[in-house]
Length: 159
Image (cartoon, rainbow, N blue to C red; front, side):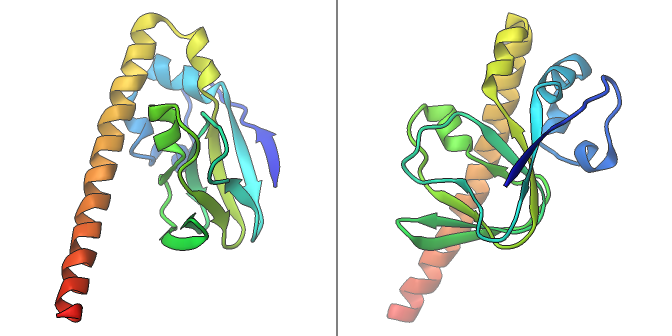
């Protein structure tokens, strides 16, 4: 796994970054602040991006590739969509990582270190958290709906 500094040019977004729905919720100045403090994570198959139980505040955005999410060693999900958030729960609740995220092949992530918030104004920091909470709420609602479908399916199969 390799970390590469992301050289952000304020006001200029490459199409791969521009299409990420999470980032589209920020105004230009706040987005520039976020992207000026990020790194690109280049991963190979088997690399662990996040390890269950570890401390961590970084937020990762999957740019390209596929990852497996494991809880207690059991795979619970596979993610392959550009823009998928990884590590959002530990960022929000301040607790240890709740799952392990392992690469299934070559993958690229945007790594956002929350220490960049110290460089933003109070208004920009509040805007960041407002967008983050809104996006994560929508993400969790989608995951809950998918889990509910699985529960109904399993209940039908088990009789």
